Amino acid sequence: MLRLRWILLAALLSLLGAITVTAYVLEIRKINRLTVLADERMAELVSMSRSVQELREKAAFYSTMEGVAHLAREQYNLSFPDEIVFKIEVEKKSLPAKGQ
Image (cartoon, rainbow, N blue to C red):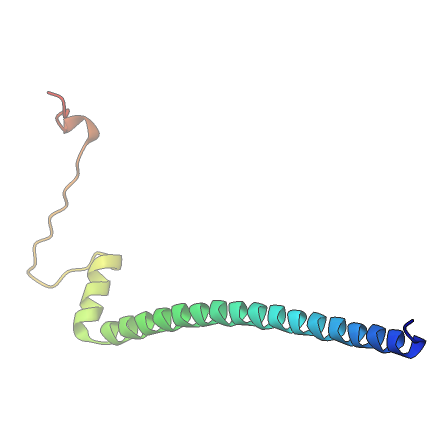
């Protein structure tokens, strides 16, 4: 017959093993979750750095004379002296139908 000491020792070892395995599994899940969060943050950081780079390029372009001229033409409809500006308007009914 097994002694009570051996039964208690086996129960204690089983309990320690269960605690160790549970802690290991929880740590692995935590590491995986943190890895996913780090990847998401890295993707967001790359996206933001790209947008900052694009804004810096726009700022550098609009600080030049060509950039100011482009901005004046695009947003304020300005032109250089002695430049002729053509405004083209298309009426919807004046276009021919595709099937004809």
